Image (cartoon, rainbow, N blue to C red):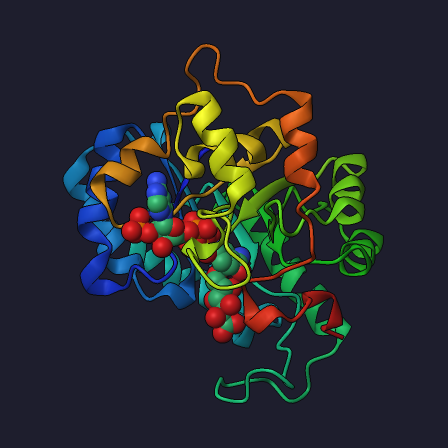
Length: 285
Ligand SMILES: NC(=O)C1=CN([C@@H]2O[C@H](COP(=O)(O)OP(=O)(O)OC[C@H]3O[C@@H](n4cnc5c(N)ncnc54)[C@H](OP(=O)(O)O)[C@@H]3O)[C@@H](O)[C@H]2O)C=CC1
Ligand SMILES: O=C[C@H](O)[C@@H](O)[C@@H](O)[C@H](O)C(=O)O
């Protein structure tokens, strides 16, 4: 799996095509989407137009949380694959460990969801893996408890956990557990979802911007480099062509954050979450 992928959250139908074309032109070969992002059909159109050999691409999507359960998960995955117009996806993950019904009443939430339903969801992903519809399977927003429960019952263990990670939210315990369990950590919202002001910002944080000046790089490149040096994969999202190109320029000779700079960035941790209105997904039953 490429360690830098293109994030497409909030790049809806009418907005995703140009940025994705710019991403391919800049050299990205991996993209991250989801059933719920409502852009898979347009992504499929870009894929066909780009004519990049399928084996050079890494396409990741996610099963939405109102599709938990065996049959519904298969249906959700089928819809994603049909919309994308591909024969297989490189990685499919469970978007959220459960409905979190206290948070999101507006969605079609299965009232009978239990931890067993989540296991049924995982069994469906195992089936997609064994029949070749998905080359790899994983999860997102899973806590240690969620992972342990799946792993106790799984035939195939989760290969990836996509979680919110950046200097304001380091999640050491969860990351260590994933590493010890051989689960690749994919960081999302590495740029703090773009928040530039207010109490919590990453792109405008003085520690980040001063490290950036020291390297002659941007705040965004420092944040992405931080994720890579921690050992995680990153998924920057942008709709700006210059940003898209800059966000993959992370491997210039000499652009290595020092141990001291890594520690300084780690020191910013305040357990701030940008996703899901700040609620910890570990609270999902
Ligand atoms: N599994 C999950 O539940 C979740 C998964 N994700 C995945 O992770 C991806 C990334 O996270 P996301 O929350 O979208 O946001 P990011 O943390 O990637 O931040 C995106 C924001 O940063 C800005 N930005 C990007 N590059 C630069 C740059 N070089 N200079 C200045 N500003 C920049 C963008 O603005 P501009 O367009 O102007 O460049 C945009 O506002 C998602 O798109 C999605 O694929 C995200 C959230 C939850
Ligand atoms: O991938 C993106 C995120 O998971 C996003 O889909 C959720 O945070 C969403 O806003 C929600 O309603 O829960």
